[in-house]
Length: 212
Ligand code: 5RP
Image (cartoon, rainbow, N blue to C red; front, side, top):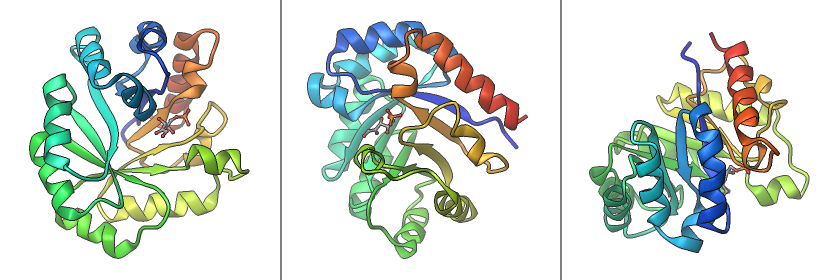
């Protein structure tokens, strides 16, 4: 089983904060993400800066794009992104036109979606899915558990490379032991730490402990 990637999600309100954090944590992660909140605040200059700082890492544009997939994906690619997210509510044509522009596309799973749709995404050539516990659901008391593992495993069985995200920390990683997760995406567990490099390193070490 491959060792899952560790991705940092930068959801700061300012570019200065985001870049200060990723300058420290970047060397300890595999993938860097210009988060939704950050891009809504500052636009795709966030992607441009990440590409410049990390020429050899995968850069993800977390637009959670719902429409105009081709245009949004082209803009993300031209800014330097490798991958982009589309929301699961987007239409197949939106996903297909976005995918044409990028080396890969991730369907971000929130709220209500069906297994019929998941099969249609695969048929449309989408091979990455992000299983997300929303920040608001977690704040409302939702926790990671067996029900999530079941869905993640079913998505993997359908052929998706599955990333998981939403309030992950060093204690939640072990829940996924034995599951071929593609990428763990962590935001606040790294960005809110006193030492973002140490926090990212601890997450990566925890991943390596269970996947080797
Ligand atoms: C919010 C996101 C976040 O980037 C993702 O949930 C990771 O952040 P955290 O670990 O802080 O929950 O997509 O929309």
